Structures are given as structure tokens and as C-alpha cells.
Length: 191
Image (cartoon, rainbow, N blue to C red):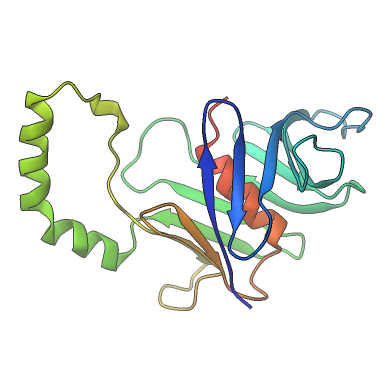
């Protein structure tokens, strides 16, 4: 089974929309009365309802650029390691699973980089139009795809991918869907 979902955000809320099911709601912090592990700060909660009464997973900060994904019963699902805030050529997102598996997600797969190279002349025209307009330049990103794979596997099947349009796809059995949802939110969360 393949899980496909997109993220949607507006000024009031943030939600994930899995294809063929009800949306999942993202709330800042953790549910009331949820005890946190020692040394952790609350980040966000993934829940099936907008009020967050029945959480699927709770994400807490447990270090610099490290997030722990916990079940409602406080069992660890994964640790997400985010890239440094400083913009890098190909930022690296990592997912560390409890069984020791490490998934690396580096922005820019070979096909997406080749596509960017082919589309470069159109991008240059776009930049000229942008320079003549009043659109903010900091809202631009390269249309690159990201694939989370096991360490050392270059051409194997990815456990999770993100398209250039922000659609995430998780192959069956690769990683827990709650970890995939948490990674999708953590990658773009601005707090």
C-alpha cells in the first residue's frame, strides 16, 4: 500500500491531507496533561480531530535540530534530524528509526537536477520578469524532489519521497505513517 498526502497551510491552521481519507490536523504544543520526557520541549501534535483530543503522534524537541516522534503512550517512533538553518546546497534531513535504520533525505535527486538544468533558460526569463515585478524574492525555491533512502543506497527504492509540488509518498512498509506526517510538517514548520 502506498500512502500519498499533501500539506496545506493557511494563517489559521496546518493540516495534512492523505489521499482517500480525512485530513489530519497539526496543533502547536502537546495535549493538556501530556507528560513530556525530561529535557524535551513541546513542538506539535498530529491529531485526527481539530481539537487535538485524540493524538496520533506527539513531536517534541529533544536537542538542537532534533525532534522525537512519540506515540500517545510515550513510545518513540523516530527521531528527526533537521538540517542546519544556514542554507546549504543540498540540505540533509535524517530519520532515525528505533531499530537503528537511518533514512537520509537529500534535496535534489538526479532526475530533478537534470530537469532544472533543462528548464534553466525559462527560469532566467522568469527572473527577469521577477526583477521587473514586485514579487518577494525570498519565496522562491528550486523545484526539486526529495527522496528518503537508507544509508549507502543510491539507486534503491526510497522509503518516502516528496515531489516538487509538495506531495509526499510513502511506500508500504518503509516507515510508520505517523513518522512520515511528522517529517512533512517538521520540514516546513516555521515557529
